[in-house]
Length: 91
Image (cartoon, rainbow, N blue to C red):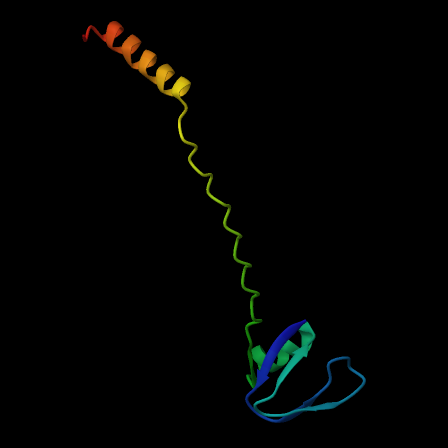
């Protein structure tokens, strides 16, 4: 199936049995064979882009609150810094 917009009013058949009037300025959904005839062969219609659904915005994840450091964590960081300075030759 294809979506088209008519540039002229003409009669045509999408199924080969029922003749229908396709009016200038109107949009229709037609089968591939009628699409080929109207758009490519006799050029009385143009393709219409299907509107693409907009992606849903992603929910922002809450940022983790920075926890205040405990005295134990501070001590651990100090020990790590001291060890690093010992191995690097700093005092």
